[in-house]
Image (cartoon, rainbow, N blue to C red; front, side, top):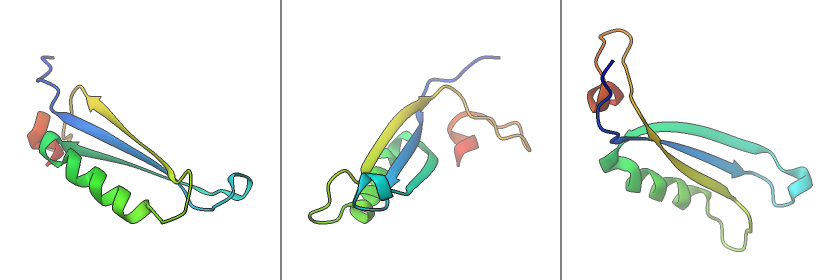
Length: 82
């Protein structure tokens, strides 16, 4: 199988929902996006998650995706992510 150029990214957001580490609930979401949406998705996550005065709200990891394959159609790459 030939892999297309990596232009898709997985954004993994790990957010802490309570102010104290011992009472913390963890909320985790993985989102696959094409390159042109990375900045807007990160901006949306930080806008919602950031609270004034809070410390340690979480982390956002951006990871390259080597390939994406839509099972139903066999489409690959950016088209498969949508």
